[in-house]
Amino acid sequence: MSKNNISRTLGKLGIKNNQQGCSNGSEWFGSGSKIDSFSPVDGSKLGNVSTGTKKDYEKLINDAQNAFLSFRKIPAPKRGELVRQLGNKIRDNKAELGELVSFEMGKSLQEGLGEVQEMIDICDFAVGLSRQLYGLTMHSERPNHRMYEQYHPLGIVGIISAFNFPVAVWSWNVALAWVCGNVCIWKPSEKTPLCSIVCQKLIADVLKENKIDNGVSCLINGDSSVGKWMSEDKRINLLSATGSTRMGKDVAQKVGARLGKSLLELGGNNAIIVTPSVDIKQAVINIVFGAVGTCGQRCTSTRRIIVHESIISEIKTELAKAYKQLKIGNPLDESNHVGPLIDLDAVNQYISALNQITEEGGELIVEGGVITGNDYASGCYVKPAIAQINNEASIVQKETFAPILYIIEYSGEVQNAIEIMNDVKQGLSSSIMTKNLKESEIFLSASGSDCGIANVNIGTSGAEIGGAFGGEKDTGGGRESGSDAWKVYMRRQTNTINYSNELALAQGINFDL
Image 1 (cartoon, one colour):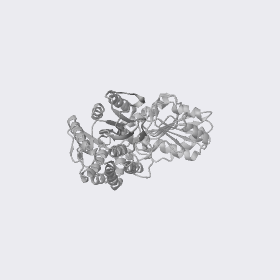
Image 2 (cartoon, rainbow, N blue to C red):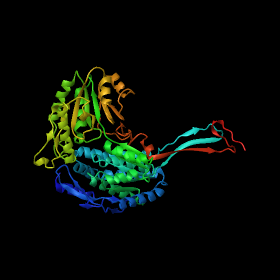
Image 3 (cartoon, rainbow, N blue to C red):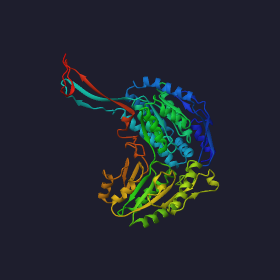
Image 4 (cartoon, helix red, strand yellow):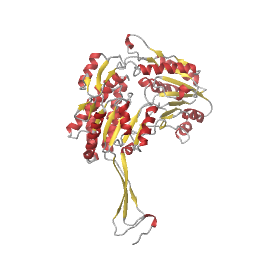
């Protein structure tokens, strides 16, 4: 995409060169310093966004508190109608928003459009959910009593999102938070500020058209200090944070210190087990997409493949062939498979990881390296690499946010591969490639994968709306986007009603006067 084309796209989306980065709905402001948005596609500057000061933050919090008092009284199906309208706004702008995601973040156009489709899908899901916020009715041990439980809105939901999914993660949270009766304040990644501006503009249109108070959906661009304010603020009733494990631990400590609620979606070190009975063609396609999609910058990216010794040579050969067919370049050119890393810091981390592989005795099956030339002027394009290495190597034990795939050999039964797979601190996504029913069932059993997501004959990458998304251990334990994940956005209340003229106590206790 040329600079003229992206300018046209930004114009259609209502984005200015100098954009205020804070909003409570109809009002836009931001008196802090500027964040420049640079595209990793070609290094061009897309614009700048003003950040929020503590004063700006306090205004947004006050607006959100006031808005909550009225928003919680709107019936849930009516709140679902607002989400339906938001979904339609996103549909109408899917092509342009998908292009912006691709150009500002660097993922392929198909992945950018796919991310916007996730936004649409979660809105559809939430609309139905707005009529299904069910509690339970229970029988009381006390005569002429009725017991039930119900769910009420929490209040203000804070959202901290990451650059790799600059719009989807926000929508996952806001769609569920809204139907549950909450209001939201969002701190997006400093690396993708323009995507956040577009989202806020779309949701602001819905609020205006329905005469909803300012403060129901708030945006504040800024650095890590904003995240610190949100973490320590007792007025934030739930803080949903997506990002690195390091960031998540910091958030968890600060929120925990005030006995607050947090929803954490953190790092992944995802593995695919490849057993002797595998359909190799199917496995290779899943492995390659999982490893190189979004240039290896998904939390669900495939980092490790654990391959049985009997087929490891064939797997290495087939993967090397597949990697030779990868086309690297402008992600908006749909003939390319791999776009750039987000920025030069990410490139440096990639180079450091390659060096560490060699230092720790790993063997590069497919060589990596930075790509240079006129078509790669941003300096953010790298070659996807494959290395055979031991699982115990320190570089394997941590998450490298780059297209580097580790091959690890196992022998014997599938349980040996599962032990290797589980022997990392992260527990987000996992897969097994097998035609053996017993192996797949062991993998899915209590003694199998310890991850929040466990797949059979599909890769680790990607999230399907409807299933609860999230992981265990250092991944944080949070769940979003499906199943009963809505419950974390609400407070549970148990109610007992006495419709007799007697005082009946539980456990047979008597209290007579």
